[in-house]
Image (cartoon, rainbow, N blue to C red; front, side):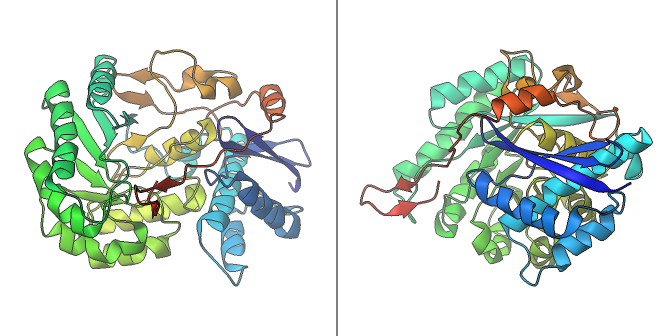
Length: 383
């Protein structure tokens, strides 16, 4: 079996799909993407495929991972690791299809029978997040995630801190005491402001604070952890086990959030989860992406023992048709019941892509980029 061809499809809303094909017609799908940098990642995938992977045996996944990573003198970072991630997903999908088994069986088998998921509810307006939180709880969610704030200066007056606290308080009052609430700081809040806000969230039983500081400033996490009882989480902007290594060594972290389309794919995400387990740290995989990325992440979530819950980026509960339905032959594989998803038991990643729909929708001219935010004085702030 040799890899003989590949195709890349940039599709709405901001996704990039990869199809691998072997000489005997076997295929595998992956999702290599950095949101807002699809063209850049696409070029990185082209370079890896054309210079190395075409003509090789796709079943040597570990060997290929090492070659893609270590074969480059300059390593790591979001672009290269996301390109590797999507290729790795597609290789696992192809191998699972070859053996007629879901990827989680090839990883050692399942460690749970279903996967708890959580949904983002925004965070801009108190009235809106309260209503959405109530709606999601009504359809069965037992965990929610909300943004803490928008543009924030390095330090803010008491009113700004009180506004953040009031948002969390409102959601807690709306959903009651039996629902997990994750508060996402998104690195928008400085370490100086985080140490003022985090202790004020303790009365509301927040499950964890996500990205309390920027990934560039993770050395401050142990100090922040000593100043609050609220658990801390980070990791969606870390791209390999080597990025996570100093995080575990320093301590102060309670939950890590690797993204299967950014942190080196299925192979690397399993290794990161295993490192976390050895440091008594839970895993809540980040996945604000498309159906291929979610399927790949769920394969890992099915097998790692230290899973807390799984993020997802499109609607899976009974609702108007979601963006993911446009690309799947059968979207019911993401069956949602009482806050859980069933395991994907089909071969490979467990989903079937509607290739005709992918080809048709890839003809659109897409230019998705995140906003550039500025403060009142015109200076740049975190998005």
